[in-house]
Amino acid sequence: MNGEKSGSVWSSDNNMEKLATVDSCVSAAEQINGSVSMTETEFRPKISVLHSLRKPDGTTGYVDHMIESAPAGLEVLPMSWKTALIGKYDVFHIHWPEYLVRAKTVPARVAKKILFVALVARLRMTRTPIVRTAHNIEPHETGSSIEAALLRWCDRKTDHFICLNVTTQVPEGKPHSVILHGHYRDRPDYQSTSPSEPNRLLYFGLIRPYKGIEDLISAFGSLGADDLNLRIVGKPQSDELANEIRSLCCDNPSISTKLAYVPDSELAEEIARSALVVLPYREMHNSGSVILALSMNRPVLVPDTPANRALRDEVGPGWIYLYDDPVIDAATLRQALDMVATDDRPSSPDLSARDWDRIGEKHYAAYAELLGIPVTAETRGTVDCGG
Image 1 (tube, one colour):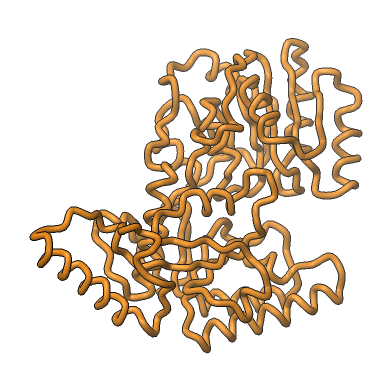
Image 2 (cartoon, rainbow, N blue to C red; image 1 turned 90 degrees about the vertical axis):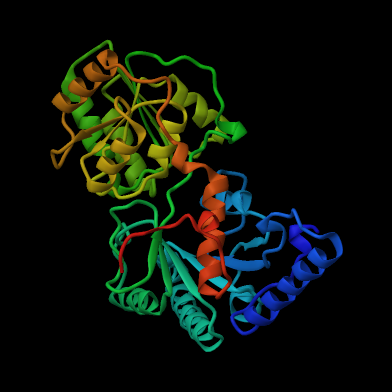
């Protein structure tokens, strides 16, 4: 029996009826053959999940991970308002909820807020479970008071939160589980054999005001070391921020920039050539950039936060370097570079808990429990973090 043909999409209204059908099939097979050897995944029902993520665009985004890690029986649907409001699916999974109500123009923002209210109302009326992955504690850019009220309302209606690390706090009393952010080791675009250049520092990723790029440029300039190089790769959030970065870098020939989106394969080369990745965020809770650097066996300098301490303990010594000052400075950069050069470390950090196949199974289990579908302890795999 093929796992993808073992049942139709489940809804909360017909779970037990379909489960009885599956059990009857197993019983009949046992009577005919004496035993069955199929695995649990070959019998489990199909669950259809609509994610609040745009369809893949050719770059590696979280939606790609969700689609590629989906196990047998789990259908991942990218976001469309038509599907969200009138389509059929079993679970709605929210990522970065603020983007469901934000837009560049006032009419578009008003329209999206109306659609958002209609969507949450529809989900409650149809008893469709709402799951939210808590990528951030709060939105990085503050929205309006109306937006904040809508997001609080959505949180109250959310049935289950998924935490990307063990330090995430969710609304009191809400069911939640830990499913770690997966690694990038298996992605073909992130394979590079380029050697590390000992004196090369790298910042990469979308450049936003909270990420502290101005602090890094200032700290690097204060080092006064002609043998070091700082490379900045990423698209600034605004033209104003791009111009500010160019102005700060123009007098320092040791700083080079590429202020644009780059293909994954090009980014892999930039990471591979670095001796140390520096991410001086003023706020940091979860970061795919940190996981990407570690996936390519490059050490990372990041602010000292509970989440980063947990990650340091997870991956082993010599990979995560922490600083506790509010703003990164030259002394921190110099100390980190010296430690990277002298510390003993294994050939790669321990990312064994971040395998995407395991993560896909944990997502299936979280959805299944919300829908009343029995799962085994092995399939469940989620770690309850209170609530």
